Image 1 (cartoon, helix red, strand yellow):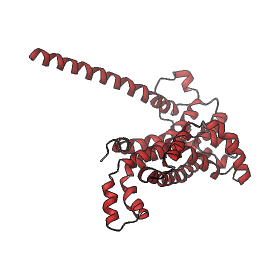
Image 2 (tube, rainbow, N blue to C red):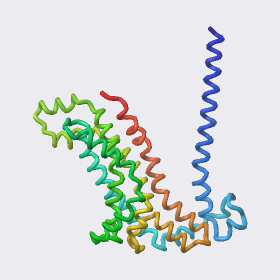
Image 3 (tube, rainbow, N blue to C red):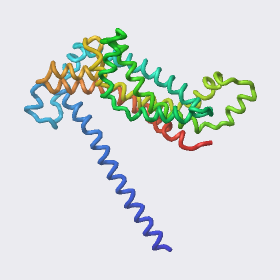
Image 4 (cartoon, rainbow, N blue to C red):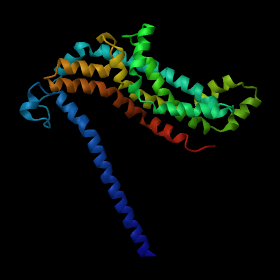
Length: 283
């Protein structure tokens, strides 16, 4: 008995040791590119060539960041924030309105509509670039911020409806039955009960879709032309052409671009984990 306990304890220690080693390796490979980018963003134009790319900067040179901010980066940042906020609000509201009847109501086309929405997840984004481009030209919104909101919403909806429908299926029906006994109609029930209970799922979708919308490049590049209407991924593209020989400057642009999403994830990671697991258990 003692031998079995000792063997089990030894195997447990080995398992924990392997897990810790793998966690350290994954953490190192994930954090090192960001540290490499930040370190090199503080270097001078020729310091990377003379001191090496992996050496720390001789001093914190903030002139790169100052030049990037003076070069129109704030305008790109504002456009990205605007597109992100409007797109996320539309995605979450439309997805919630679609997921509620799919999850709670029984009607003839329920299964077909749900399958159709899930099938839309398989549509590649690149085959829609030309039709969407022609549509924006016809609507007169080409080369405007509004041109990017429609495609962002359309491609985020299938996965959002899929996840939110599964999440709402896990909400106990007894809550709705009690509300119906008290005379609560479906619309009031949706806004005062279902949406508050679905906050973990909505938070997860907000973080997931927010990262994708923030980094979206294809539609932003296709549907905009002037710098005043472009978003942050195109700022990297434009600054790369402008400072092609100044690698630390490019690193500064990249650092400012990814920093908001990193900060958001640090403060919202608990909501993301809770949202991913909250709908796993029904009842």
